[in-house]
Length: 151
Length: 173
Image (cartoon, rainbow over the protein chains, first blue to last red):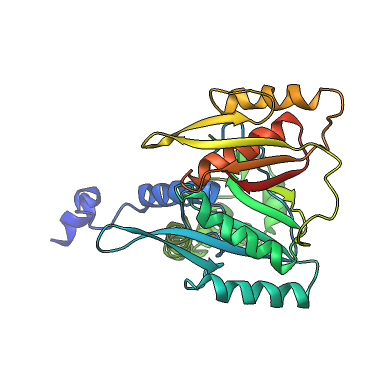
C-alpha cells in the first residue's frame, strides 16, 4: 500500500478547491465595483429627477446647504401625494419645513437651499416650496437635475 | 575527510566558484536549507479580505445617475413694488397640451413667439436678449400652469440659461 503511494503520487485524488480562479473572479468583481462606485450623500434619496436636454446642471460646492426632497408618493387607492422631507429624514408637512427653513437661515445666513423634486410632480407642489424658501430669506435657489454626463 | 573540508567552505566562496565545479556537499546543503525555509503564499487571508471588499462594494453600490444643480437668484419677497420694473421681463408661458401631461405648449408673451419645443425655446429667448433694450440681465419669468410637470419647468429653466439669461424668476400662468 505504502509502495503504491510512493510510486504513483500524482494519481492520488486532490480534494482541495482551486483557489486561483476563485481569487481571479473575486478580484475582477472587486475592481469592477470599486471603479463604478460613487459615494453619494445620504440626502440624495432615489427619485426620478428632471432631465433637460443639453443640461447645464453642474455639481456645486456648497459647504452649508440644506436639501429638501420632494418625492411622489402613491396611496393605496392609486392617488398621488407629495412627500416633503429634509434630506433623508421622514416626510414632514410644509409648515414644519417652513419653520425649519426660517430657523436655519437665522442661525447661518450663508446657508443655501437645494430643492430635489421628482420630475413627475405638478409645478404647483414645487412652487409652494420655492415660495416658502423665498419667504424664509433664501435668495439663491438651487434645483437638482440630471447632468449631461454619461447620458 | 575531503567531504568534511568541502562542507566547511563558506557559502560566499562556493558561490564564487564556476557552476560546474561547485562542491557536491555545499549544493546539497543549500538544497536542504531551501527545503527547510517554507515560504508559502497564503491564499486564505487574501481571499477573506477580498470577500470583505466585495461585500462592502456590492452592498454600498447604487447605480445612481449623475446629478447637478441649476441655480438662480430669486427676487426678494418685499411686498408690492412701489415703482414699475425698469426692465420688461421676458415671460415664457407653459401650458399643458390637452389631456396629455407629457405635451406642453410654449409661448413668449408680447413677442408672439411659439417655440415647438424646448430646443426651439433657446434661440427664441436668445433672439429677444439680442434686441435693443434687452441683455443677459433682463429677467426671464417662467410662468407655468399648475398642472405642468416639474420636468418641463426645469427644461424651460435650462433653455433660458442656455440662451444666456442670468436672472430667472417663476410665476403662475
